[in-house]
Amino acid sequence: MTLSDIYEKAGVCRLPVDPVAIAAALGIKVVNYKTAASFFGVNVHKLYMQFPLGFCFKCSGILGIALNENSCGDRRRRFTAAHELSHCVLGHLDGKDALSQSEERNADCFAAELLAPLVVLNACGVNSSEEIARMCGISRAAADIRLMRLAERERCGLCANEEERRIAERFCAFIAAANSRKALSAYTNSRSMYRRNST
Image 1 (cartoon, rainbow, N blue to C red):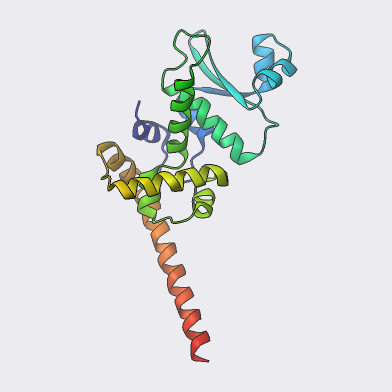
Image 2: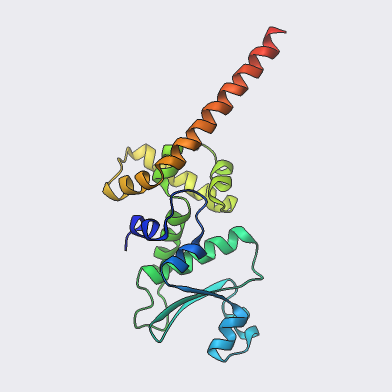
């Protein structure tokens, strides 16, 4: 399943993206640790110790995500939910007990693109990590990395592929609104500078 397929199935067409709502749209259960502990018949403290932020599972053919409701804040939980969702949609849970480092890196990359798609950021003309963090509801550290990836993309002169074009089409109204707000802000700022300079 591609990212554009996920956005389409979940009806996502604007930022910030809600990975918990996407999981629900894909039929993936999202639970807190108390519910997960009860389901698996384990002590909840064991889950907190073994999985500080969250984990994903497959049980009787049902995919699920357990999120630590006490973890570091909304932005961190958003990324954790997206990371665990990535494991589910990338098929990392099929027939294994443990995930490889490669699968963990793939889930991080997929989660970052899910929450802050480069083609959308580029089309919106973002130019700071603060803007990315605010627009995407992610941490400043994650936004710094996305800004670096965006700069790499521009340096390499990469053109949008078919998948990215599909994503951009889904987000076209959001992109247009973001660019209109930017243009209005630039106009307002230039008008106020003009007034200051003319007095």
